[in-house]
Length: 113
Image (cartoon, rainbow, N blue to C red; front, side, top):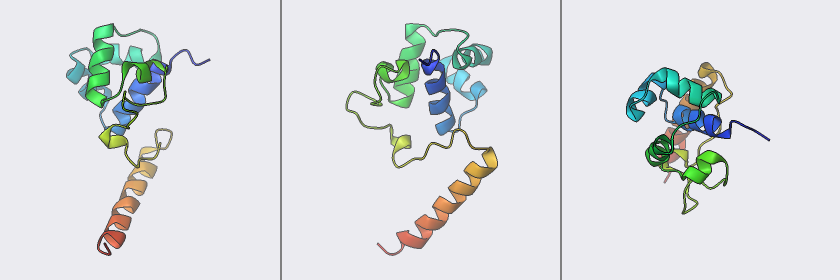
């Protein structure tokens, strides 16, 4: 069983919003070292921080804790999650190439609507 699902989900959501740890730690009003420890599983955030994270990403605390795979109580993904691919394990260059290709496809097929 994964003992750090909370940290991994915080990191995944943060990266999908293209935020680095310093940017997101400022949003949460905590140090980037503290956020790093949360994501690594070396420290557990308070309930208040869990709620801030859940609210920011429009997910439920249950999702953050791994108690459900539904993002929020309605079961809908956050807006930034719609039609997205999990690219968290890819290098930054690969992510940029995917983003460029998606823009190309939008231009190619968007005008046919």
